[in-house]
Length: 375
Ligand code: ACO
Image (tube, rainbow, N blue to C red):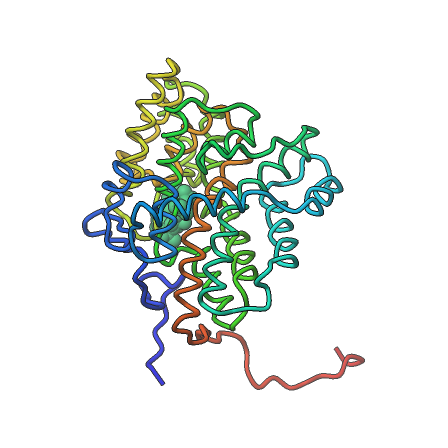
């Protein structure tokens, strides 16, 4: 047996090997299958990145076309799911609805009894294709709106915006959104991905792993941070108020959402990409208030704590400027991250060993048992 080593929160512990993404804090870089995220956001799109993550290589043109077609063919969800969404309480939490949607899909997956690599790849693509409809439909229904059918002339990300908001985004907005999806698509052994790998390491299925991942993503220390960051910016209100607000919050030991990272201590490359997009979209839409407020929050955090923004900070006000409802920001993260989750679960299953760490027991031992009538 290997020597046990304890690190709270598993910080710094290597929990497995992967060839999917490389988070390199020494260089503030992120690579998917060896390709730098900076190059991918410049030259690629979410569909190609999803192919890269799931299949392991960049697609040829014909592979890319076939993959995009499959994603489109698989966009719809069964009517039984839509009927079930109608029974949800008004204003249900979109991440909770996504969990139910994924559970219901599991019951109807044509490959549900096949755990081969090929079947898992098909399930991965199916899940990635259906996430937008699961989220947009359940959201609209629970808010008393009619659903919007997918439009197959639109790409994955822009079709999601269309199904969610009921109007087609212009090409600039669609492109910024696509870049955010590429940035969110994978990130090493983050909490949700690790949860999915732990789950399938028991030889459970991709749907179960996806449910574990959604649950982990929901928390504000992980994917939930993009929603909390925007709520914070709204509370800050104006650029003039930002410095004092942050100093006050730090004085009361509040965590500033969208800041800090377990791995990157000197800069999250995704935040750098998206902060630039945040400046650009603010200028294009002639609405710079949130970008300016965010810039002062950032400056103050750097000066006071030397803590930098993570990916969730710029996406918060970018999505706000796009007119997206705040409670849908974390589900958007899931729309992107399902590609990474699926790739990791397949990698885990292709070379599986049960993930089962030890606990350092700190409780009492050898106590005398006292019967209930004598306690
Ligand atoms: N605001 C204020 N202080 C912070 C922040 C923050 N956002 N992040 C870290 N710190 C401080 C902590 O208070 C702690 O200070 P102390 O040593 O004086 O107690 C120190 O920095 C270390 O922080 P930890 O929480 O122990 O660092 P850890 O590596 O465990 O946490 C985490 C990383 C959870 C991301 C943390 O920075 C955080 O809570 N950030 C806010 C939530 C957030 O933005 N999450 C999204 C992460 S990225 C993603 O999931 C896509």
